[in-house]
Image (tube, rainbow, N blue to C red; front, side, top):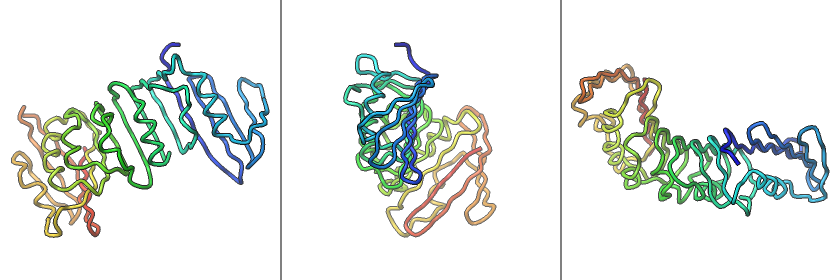
Length: 262
């Protein structure tokens, strides 16, 4: 089976009616079920009703049609708000982009653990911190864009991330200013394309930490504060290339948020 451009699973529930869509390039399967009722499957204009009353297990089974020798091979894999079990026949995932939204923390971990090799883009968005995410080898193999909206990434984990990341967005209570201060200069030096973002929400190791301390070691940066939380930065890389950045720095209780972009 050739590599697909896209494999996606979307789920929604409205008025006790569950809807799941499975997309594999041009092949789309629609599943619908009223709470406790049979599952209706529609594909290529054909409608089939199954007596099973668990739409998630039926959807998981149908996903197996798109695996070859236990492998899912697609340019982009997108899982959106779905709670289907990982298909029993799925052993490995190969993709360039992996995008997951509101799967539930441990379900997200289980999918990620199946990813083999490097990925260019990895986006995980959850409501609560995903425990175990920071120690996954898969996040250290991300090449261009890493977005982890709720995680347990630590300062130590930051050291294992690729130095070539173009966009980095992290939110973790176990990241401190110490990790961010090491990461930031490297990101500024590697910056090469307008539109990339550096955004980290972290907890300072001390209540005495001041935002200006974040920038004190940036010898090649000129920072002008527009407002208490807004600044502009002119940064000259070692190559002589100069970039003009916009930035925010918010402090809310124990949390600090640093964001830089062009």
